[in-house]
Amino acid sequence: MARFPKPAPAGSFPPRHLRAGNVAIEFALIAPVLVILLMGTVDYGLETYYDAQLQQAVRAGAEYVNNSGHSQDTAGITAAVQGASALTGIAVATPTGSYQCSNGTAVAGVGSTCANGSAVGSYMTISATFTYTSFVTFFSSAPRTLSSTVTVRYQ
Image (cartoon, rainbow, N blue to C red; front, side, top):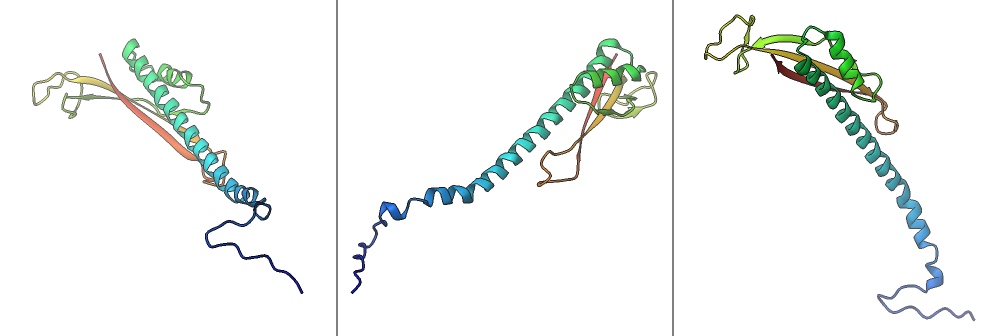
């Protein structure tokens, strides 16, 4: 006649030798989820970093306009934007100039007058884009276009 082990009291755990592989099995189940979360976090962090680099590069172009006063030097503005960042592949749109009153109303030129009596200002708008391709195609295989625009008033 076979002897069966005595049943464990309610609320107790099975003996240690019957639980030996549980940790390994639980880790094997959760590890892929943790790796996917880590990869997504790194991918998002890289995209945010590249976006900040692009914004800094466009601000450098605005600083070039403000410091040099050469609003028509589009080649210099483009070089300032592309040279301000280690990113390769920054596409700089042709900078555009405009004349505006202090309230944002566009006017024809410097000789114009503003309705509120304020002086007409010269403004330059600089835009650039950068195409970010994720290194993790699991989340998104389509490249994302990051863009940044700065408008600066110059004298």
